[in-house]
Length: 132
Image (tube, rainbow, N blue to C red; front, side, top):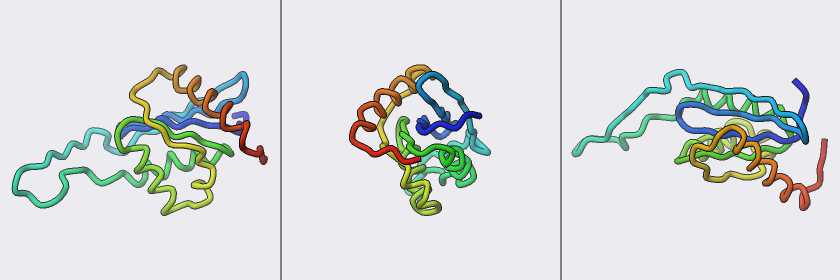
């Protein structure tokens, strides 16, 4: 795999797509949680939030893929993107430093994910020193 400065992570609770990209090429890695079909429903008068706990192995695998780049944009629907950031801040502050932004994004196609990230970094790179 060619090393790229930038990456984008699109994440929900069923999968994470990590795209490492340069000006003309892109590589993709998809990471899945150990059990993507866990559904917990909250019942009235029950204890607990009704939410499944984060899959720490899944979040760690996504973070490991992110570490291959120098600047990463994290996007996705709902809370998974924030759970990933929280996990990284707690377990790997070095990777936390490469997070350039966190944004909401529903379920775009792969090309749209990369196009959005390229536009994001085109703007961000104008105001950020590039360190290799």
